[in-house]
Each structure stands twice: as C-alpha cells, then as structure tokens.
Length: 405
Ligand SMILES: Nc1nc2c(ncn2[C@@H]2O[C@H](COP(=O)(O)OP(=O)(O)OP(=O)(O)O)[C@@H](O)[C@H]2O)c(=O)[nH]1
Ligand SMILES: [Mg+2]
Image (cartoon, rainbow, N blue to C red; front, side):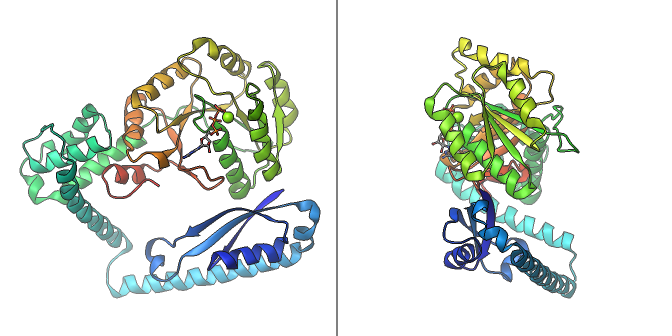
C-alpha cells in the first residue's frame, strides 16, 4: 500500500481525481478542508484534501506514472504561477499602501491583541472566580484568564510580574501589557531543555524512536499518525516494532495500521529480543518506531519489563517519547513524568487536546519540568490529528485569542 494526497475544490472533485488516477480500489483514508492562510485567504477559496491509500501491485498507479508525473509537473507549475501572481499582487498592495511587511505583521498582531483585550473583559465578567488577587482590574483579568486555563497560580504570578512594574500605565497601554504577557508565556514554552540529541536521518543512519506511557493515552494511534507523516511528508521508509504482546489485540492494532501504510512490523516477545530485531531492520529503513505496552505509574513492578527494554538499547541513540493524555490531572501527569524520568530521558507527546478546553497543563509542565513538548495530538483521525507543538499557538490559546486545535 502507498499513500497519496489529492486536492479539489470540493470533496467530489478530489475523490474523482483519486478514482481517475488510482482506480476504484483506492481506499479513502481522510477528507479535510484546507483553508488558505494569511493574505492568501482573500484570493483563494477553501480546498478539500483527500488522502488515499492504494495497492501498488495493482499496477494502475505505476502504469500511469509518466502521465501522473507530467500532471504533477503541470500542477506544480500552475501552482507556482498562481503563487507568483498572488505574491506580485501582495507586493503591489504593500507598495501602494506604503507599509512594509513587517509593519503589516505588527498591525495584525495589534488588531488581534485589541480583540483579545475586548474578549478578556467580557470573559472575565462571565468567569470571574472569587479569588481577588490584584487591585488593578486588568491585572485581575489576566490572572482570571490564565486561571480559567488551569495555569498554576505561582506560574500565573510569575507571568504577571512582567507587567507588575507598569503600575497605572497598564490601563493606558493595554497592548504593551498583552504583548509582555504573551512574550513571557512564549519564553516559558520555548525554554524547555533539549539536550537529548535528536537523531537525524543522515546517510546510512536509521533513526530509532520509542513511545512509552500509561495505558490508553494514544501511543499506538500516535505511532500510526507519525508513520503516515514520515512517509507522506519526508518520504521515509518506516519500520515498526511492537513490544506490546500483553493484549492480544495490541499486535493486531499496529498490524492493521502497518498494512494500510504498507510497512513492516516486527514483534518482540521478550525485552532482550529487541536489539536483534532492530539489527535486522536497521539497514532497511530510515526510521524505526517502537511501540510499548501501557504502564501504570502506580504499579512499580509493572515497570520492570520496560526498564529491561530501555537498558537493552542503552548503547543506541534511541529517541524516547513519553506520551501523556491532556485529559489527565496535572498532578498525575507530574507523577508519571517523575516515575518515567527514573528510567531515561525523553521528550513529550501530549494527546487528546480535543477532549479538553484548558491548555494550562502544557505551560505548567514546561515550566515545572523543562522537558520539551514535541507533538500535540488533536483527535482520533490518522494521519491528520497530530501537529508539532508551536509555542505561539499555545500562548494565544492560553490568552483566549484562538483555539489550539
Ligand atoms: N479524542 C482523541 N482520542 C485519541 C487521540 N489519540 C488516540 N485516541 C484514542 O484513544 C484510544 C486509545 O488509543 P491507543 O492508541 O490504543 O492507546 P495506547 O496508548 O496505545 O493504549 P495501550 O496500548 O492499551 O496502552 C483510541 O480509541 C484512540 O482512537 C486523540 O488525540 N484524541
Ligand atoms: Mg497501544
């Protein structure tokens, strides 16, 4: 199986393209609307993107390859031309108005800040908690907004320290206050240490990645999303290994995804088998992702096997990710991080953002642990519901300027 993306003005048009190029047996994996961003939203309409899986053996796709390549080239060329045209138009507009791109960005930001400040005032009256911390009305509004996102009080206080010195100037210079708060949040989200070297797919070197975490947080689903994206976006050859042979369904779950993506899955029944399995697959792939069984941090004995797995690969530069669900309590998340930290260093993947409307845990975790949050997952759809954690987006969500998703 291989994956391919198609675009159209409507779902029907995109699916028609799939059928035309890949035939009736192609499997539609996902359909999503792609809104143009930035200034292009004024010139282009929303497009529909369809991801389809097809069987290479059927030859249909291969038989059409030259034609497809030609189409792709033409499409790329017309895309380039459209882009050039939009760019020219944009440059012209910018010239006419005699404002630089930089100024436009600042203006946009200021508009966002203004609408946010308005929203803050309205929301704060709706959700105002009993706790009155500041005499200054605006300081209190900031505090309430952060508290409504479950940002820990001590962290909210440190953030608001940034504007504490402004005194009454806050009321007359709201934009500056919002900007200072926004930048402070950004610095906390971006300061996370990243001294675990991230392996790169350099010549002949295969990246190895392991996901671990509590039960049911979305490890296996996240592996399917990551694999699809590595295949689609990076053109990597991906191999999977599962060390989760506890649940009968666990191996089947990963195999189902692997079959759709057309990738190899290795199974290891004992921790000590992992190295051998990796050795046999390393030369065949650009990246190998290892799935592990869910572990409860309350059951210490349960960890023995995972500890043996980690010890067995201590000589390899394997990247490890702890996967946590945003539906967990923040205190539990900290406990889990502490327990797993005793075994190895890792980065974080936070899942199920779609099931919560408070994002404070992201900031709290970055502040408290300094561990880097690399990915956020936002739903059950494979491969679309995953994205890199973008500090700017999270900071805006924490200030009520826009949703994370
Ligand atoms: N709403 C939502 N559900 C998700 C997300 N990621 C995974 N899930 C769902 O969470 C459930 C558990 O997902 P799995 O991938 O099996 O979780 P796991 O961590 O591998 O589970 P174990 O292997 O049993 O420990 C499934 O129903 C997934 O569809 C997400 O980002 N949002
Ligand atoms: Mg699993």
